[in-house]
Structure formats: C-alpha cells, structure tokens
Image (cartoon, rainbow, N blue to C red; front, side, top):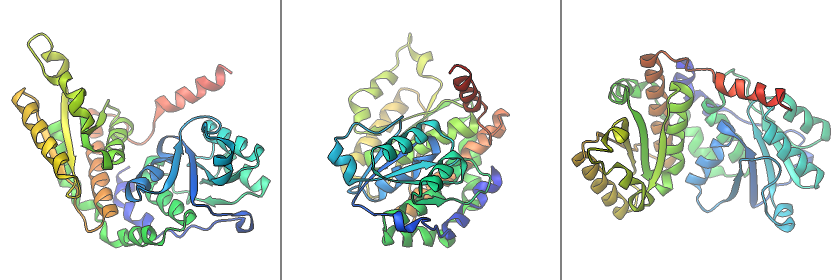
Length: 324
C-alpha cells in the first residue's frame, strides 16, 4: 500500500488504447456501470465536469431509463478485476439489447466477453494494486473515452505536479488525532465525491467505520444528532469531524461550515479542517485524496489492521456463490 501511494503520480503518464476501435462509437451521453473503486473515476470526472451527461449505475442490469435514452448513450462497463458480477450483468444486458457497450478492465471475464463479442475495450495496466488505488488509470481511460482533451491535459500535468510523499508528515498527525474515533467527513455538494473517497479509504485501508455528508443538507437534519445532552453524549462521543473546504466553494457554504464547526466545538466535539490546495481542480482533488490515503494507512498501522486486502469483501463473494 505504501508503494502504491508513493507511486500514484506515475499513473498519470498512462496512455490508454481503445481496442476494437472500428466498433467504437462515441457519444455525448454516457452510462458507466461499476461498483466500488471501479466507479470512482466517473464520480471525480463529474466533479471536474459537472455538466457532463455521465450517469453512474451501481447495480445489476441496466438503469431504469427509457429505451431511447439507453440507445443514445455509450455504456461503459468498468471493473478493475473484470469479474464483478453486477458489472458483468450490466455489460451482458446492454449487449443483448443492442446498446453501444464497451469495457474498461485489467482482465477477467469482462475483458474476455468484450473480446469474444468484438466490442471495444481498454485494458488497464495490471500492477497488482487495489481498485481504489487505480483512480489515475481509470480517470485517464474515461477521459480518453469521452475525448476530453482539457481533462487529459490536467491529468497529464499531475505526473510531475503531484507530490505524494510531501503529505505523509501531515497524515501522521491527522491519524493520531483520529485514533479511537469515527471520522465524519463534511464538504460542499460540489466536492461530495472527494468526501466519499475519504470515507472508503478509511473503510477499506484502515478497516474502520466512517461517514460523510454535504453542506448545506447537514444543517437541516444531521447536525441535530450531535446536539448532545447528558443522556445522549456518549452516543456522539466517538465521532470526530473533518471539514474539507475549497476556495471555489460558495461564500454562504463556507459561512455555514464555519458556523457548524463553532457549534460542534461548543458542544465538546473536536473538529479538523483541511483546505484543498493546488493549481487546478484535479490537482486539489488528488492532493486531498493522497492525504486521505496516507492518513488511512497510518490509522491501519495504529490499529494493527491489514491495509491492502479486503477479506470481508472476499468472504462475502464466496458466500454469495455458495448460496446460489
């Protein structure tokens, strides 16, 4: 895991190739079917390109859109391993309905199926890293598919601009402040997928519970759950709050964050605030996610958990097959 974080910037030198190019037809509308780490790139791309018609489907089969909508879209089956059953279901159903479908994967049944059917595909590098750590590869592949040269240029710059080793010292201190607490990550709606990435890194790398939500929605409901009195204080005591702020956030959102921080602190809760930093939006995002990676790894060390593998996921998959 440590080497994966140190080498994250190397992913941005990747130059994907769309195989079976003659069968490839681009579109202005995209539906990406993927689970876990295999849909994170689409989420981040939507953060960078909020107006893009890119829909993420995290389930079996096809999303409940009408037939004309489905036929107008390029369907992208995304699975790092190539063996995710929900994504295989998405690919197969799209093919059976005659939809425009392609695959992105390192291999497995998904890539075999795409090759067998003559469908276009991108074969990601097999580096042995976990799907959540392959975000750079996935993003460049997705930006190539949608032909976004501006995003590709920004991603390419990260090969030299992203300095993953520089945030490790900060992560050590952050992990110490989070030890024996449950992280709750708050951010603006525009950066919801950054907060989501922080959450899953705590879940998968540190093997701890973590939660996220967005401002202003939090101000209308969730925050009242932390308005503790003597009889409920022990329920909220384990939580520690991380606010992820961005200079691009709406001034009123920043005001809401500042006020919420103050109210939480007045009620005895510790608050940690982190500002996104970088020349471009994607650099700001990846600087933040690298800090999250290091922090999760440091927490894993503090707790003595295994950071790389996800044994509960593997056990679940085995039981799923056993119970068929």
